[in-house]
Length: 529
Image (cartoon, rainbow, N blue to C red; front, side, top):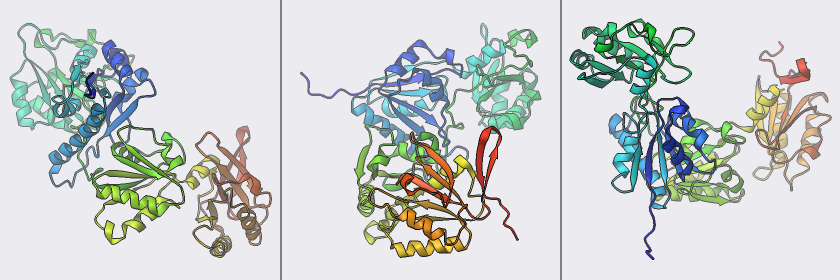
C-alpha cells in the first residue's frame, strides 16, 4: 500500500449568468460533494456566486471566502494595482493549496464561465499545474444577454468580437468598426467611453444595453437611451448580428414594462476585483471584534480578516463562535491570561503568520485590543504590525433591542474589580450619576462576584430617583436572549450574570408604550435648559 498522501482535486465551477436554473447538473453535483467551497466577494462579504450555489451546499462544508481588499479605491501598494492583485491572488492560492495538500477537494465558484473574464482563472494559473484540476463550463453573460434580447449574435461567416470596456475609446471604436457583431463587457464606470466609441464607429444605433441578464433585475434598452448614472458593473453592450437586424420589438423576453435584461459573469466585485490598500499581510496581528453573537453581527471587514488568517487566538468560547477551518490553527486559552495570549499572538506573527485575535463585541471595549497593544509596545515586538477591527459592542446591541437609550451623553463602566479597586469604581459611578449620564455597565457579575450589583444599585439610589429606567439585557443576539425594562428600585441582582449588560437611564430617559403593547426606551437628543 502506498504511503503517499492523496492530494485533493481542484474544480473551477461555472454557475451561469444569474438564473439559478442555468446552473448545470454537474456543477450542482460537484458543489454538493466538495470538501471546501471557495468564492470571491467584495469587502461587504456578499457573494453572487455563493448565493447561486447555496441550494447545493450541504451545510457542513468548509467555506473559503476570497475577499478582495478593495474594489474601486486606489491603492498605496508599492507594486501598484498589479502588484496588489498579484499578492492577493497568491495568498488565495496558498489558502486553497493548504486544503488540496491535505487531501480535500476544492470547488471554486464562478459566475458565468470560469475561464471567461472570471476570477477563477487566477487560481487556475497558480494551481492547475500542481494538482488534478477540472473546469466545469457555465453559460456566459454574453449568451445570457443574447437569449434575453432574443437576437442572434452571429450567423454563417459573421465574426463576433468580445471587448472589455476598459480599453481606450479609440481602440474600442477601431475594433467595433471592423467586426460584424460585438459584446462589450465591464461597463459601469466605462459606459460613457463605450457609448462614445460606438458612436465614433457608427454602431450606436445598432447597440443594445443588457443589465443583469436572466435575473429578476434584468433590463434591456437601446444603448443610446440609457442614463450613464444608472449603469451597474453587471451589464454589457451588444451589437447583434447584422444579418438579423429586424425590429426587436417582436423578439426577446419582455416584462410588463417593456424592459429586457442581462448580466455579466465577472467576479462579484468588478473591475478585475480590487486594488489593495494594505489588506491582510503576512506577519501581522489583527484584533477582531466578533460582535455580540453570530455571523449576522459580524462586519465584512472582520469576515475578511478571519478568512485570510493562518492562526486564530482567543478565549475558548469566543473561538468556538468562529466556524472551524482545518487550514487554520486555533489557540484557545483561559479568559484570565490576556497578556500571555497577546504575547503568543505576537510571537506567531513575528514568525511570519497572519494572526487574528478574537474578542466578543468590540475589541477596544474592555477586551483584547488594549492587552495586545500593551504587549506589542514592548521592544521585542516593536516591528510586528498590529491592526484593530471594530465590532458591535454589547451596549449598542442591548440599546437596539429597546430603542435608543443611548440617544444622549452616556458613560461606559465595568463593574469588575479584578483589574481595578472597587473604590475607583464607586467614585466613577457617583461622578456619572451626579452628571446625569446614562450608564452602560459591563461585567456586572459573575459566579464569584455577586455583591457588586446590589452595591451599585444602592449607591446610585443616593443620587437618582427610584423610578430611573433600567434595561437588563442578557445574551442579546444569542439563543438565551432576554431583555427586560425595569426601574432602579426594582432591579433584582439575582437576574444578573456575566452575560448581562445593565443600562441605567438618565433623568430624561423615557419609557413609552406604543401600539401592540410595544415598549420603547429612548433618551431625547435635547437636554432641558
